[in-house]
Image 1: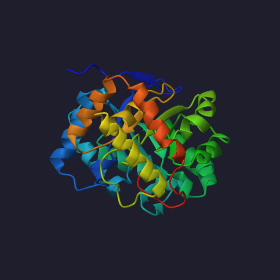
Image 2 (image 1 turned 180 degrees about the vertical axis):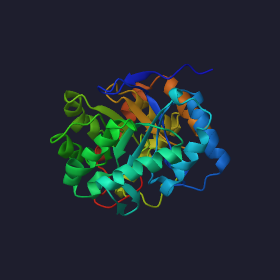
Image 3 (image 1 turned 90 degrees about the horizontal axis):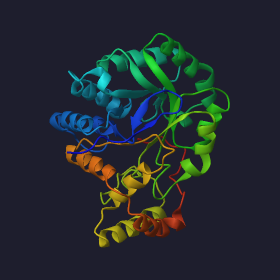
Length: 314
């Protein structure tokens, strides 16, 4: 029987999230076809193992993730889990951060998810739009929805570090979600942003510990845009871990979970066996010598990220 996952405070919100949270993007069939049974079991297993913060978005599966999540959560006491979704991005190149869409989006998400409130709502992938609109229109509209009790805490998600500073230099947020920026290969979140966020009391959520499969033994998705040098270095690191009898995915996940400045790391799968494996890894000690060896192999490509400027799944 697994012990409960450790929790950490989320900025100044008063919430405590497990160090490992469940990402529901896979429920939207973003990576492969998913059966209804798989989707429902993966959510229930995550909750049973203490991954009681769930992150989704209307973008994932163009609504499918929220719908399946709502089905999976039927009958589960609402006070037993925390739920976050997003708004503003609805398809690969369809963005709408208008005040009117903010209200519509929250109401639609509430209906799909079968709840009367959302714990966290984030503006999704704001770097692909004119970001001043987020400050001037989107966040004020989201605050009005929060004042009505439909949303508890608000924030933003994105890839470039500069996007977070752009917004936070002008207004307050409760939380941010950064993805693929705190991994074995890329630690820009900690290097460039964590001190700034902590000074402002902003909760920090990290997603993508496997860097969209780069730090696993699985085939890369077709949309992966990391340079070939990064892919090659990660293959060498995976082979080194394999020779040591360890899956590089375990090292990658444990490395992200070990940073006390990151409230939670979000990982998602519609495969219940993966969810169980991750929860088990979260309970096991980090092999520091192996981490150091892997990071040495990845040092030539440290902090090299994917090409920015084109919408992608996250």
